[in-house]
Amino acid sequence: MSCFAQHVAEVLGGQRAPAQLRHLLTGAAYELLRRRAGAYACRHRPRVRRALLRVPGPGVGEVSAVVDCGERCRALALRVAFGPGRWVCTHVETDLCR
Image 1: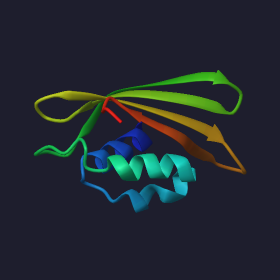
Image 2: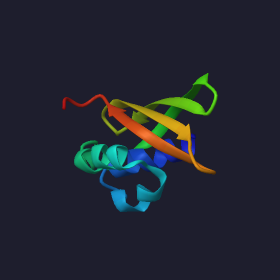
Image 3: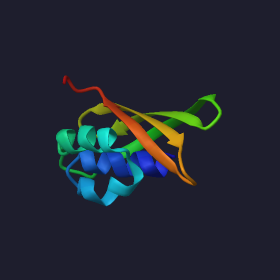
């Protein structure tokens, strides 16, 4: 999951196109990510410093991560669910105002 969080952080940092992760997100989660793409822009590629996985129930996971963006760290939260034969991200939450 930390690898997926890193990919999401790269989209938020403007280093990766949101379309590269489209197949891993539900429609609503993809739109959230697409709207926030580039919001963590910094000189260097954002790097996930720490990621924690919480499993609140069967087939559901919540990832919280601290993203190093150079001068500051940002917060990232992802909700994932096991769908038809694979894990998909159902929600993306950031520390940015809506």
